Length: 494
Ligand code: FAD
Image (tube, rainbow, N blue to C red; front, side):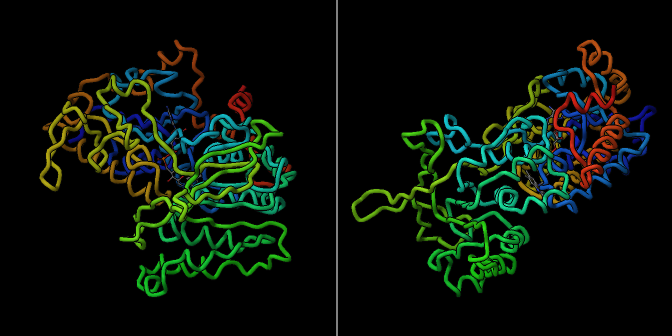
């Protein structure tokens, strides 16, 4: 049922989840008006700040998002860190629904000695942000010149992105939108050897074929063959699903690049659990090596993707250990979403353990403590949903999945919201009963933002920043040269 005034929806976060949800909702409801709030002055989340600069085709989704933004029913409100700059409760009176799509602002830690205290120990998240021009990590300044070895713990595609950027020919990166300061630093890098280390075996690794193949074909970079005994037996490999079988075959075949001709190399090191990060006595606090314990796969279930690992013991009864020399270390064991301050004012109990906003899988926010309205799930179980509150993307599912799966997920949430809007007269399933709430959206919130001295950016502002970055890039022969600090972005607008 459509009511007299527009339906006002606030979307928190302008990454792929936020944009795909906006696209779908605006297409489904002609009376919907979306205000998209973003912490940074600029849009696109990890499409801009996560996806590797040498994967420009992945960023094509930004063209679709730009098309969404041309709608007269779409409004971008950048440079507002919701929950910090402005309380979430300031939105509530002015919207019919709030959809959280704010992604994952942190990463998982290893919790090993030396991780916090030593210099040159970084999260992949920070390194990725640094080379992609994310203001938060502008000053990371990783030391790539004190030694030749790098260790990355974690065996997903993000770990391979980090390895590829460390090993790529810097001239190949010059033509990308990699941050200028990162390019300068990488040009002086002495890193020659990168180990990508995992706790489990090849069958349990999270990386995918395309990314592994790209690594194996990197010009001037050789790959250390993986010891045969690490692989599952041939009969197990031939019975695997097609994609997994191809991955195993690819890994077993290795790289055609001749180690004699290669100036750099990489390896995949399996079945190693990180124990601690250490320094040499002559250089206190400067990382010198990483200590690992050897693992064994669960003998009762060694070939399942979810196989557990156990520590491997020597005949002496001691744990088998390995030291890997390294002058720079990256942990890449996953991103992590956090609760926005003030979520609880809206009745949301963030699920800290799973790192998500609790939801019914369709995008409705659910209550862990039984507040809200009862909803019956397809399996017959009953949950409580919080009317008018929705989530999508990594903050809904957890920080896994590519842009395509984020899109599907955001569409599901937008469809759910559209369905709830259609039913609103009966179920009052939104933040306010029909015709209640101010219905003003951003026009109602603006005064509070002004009172707090905030400087929101509009879509027009982003287009000016975009043009400035492209112009800077043109002078350097790259698609864009990103402005790495918020102040620099805002200066363009003065
Ligand atoms: P995000 O993209 O993180 O967007 C969340 C947005 O919310 C951000 O803009 C953030 O600034 C904003 N925000 C956060 N807090 C607030 C707040 N308080 N107020 C307002 N706004 C806020 N997928 C592919 O398909 N191909 C790839 O090659 C690929 N490479 C990747 C490389 C890396 C390193 C990573 C981490 C991911 C990669 N992905 C890739 C996955 C893809 O980026 C994600 O699936 C997708 O970005 C998730 O979308 P999202 O909108 O949920 O989160």
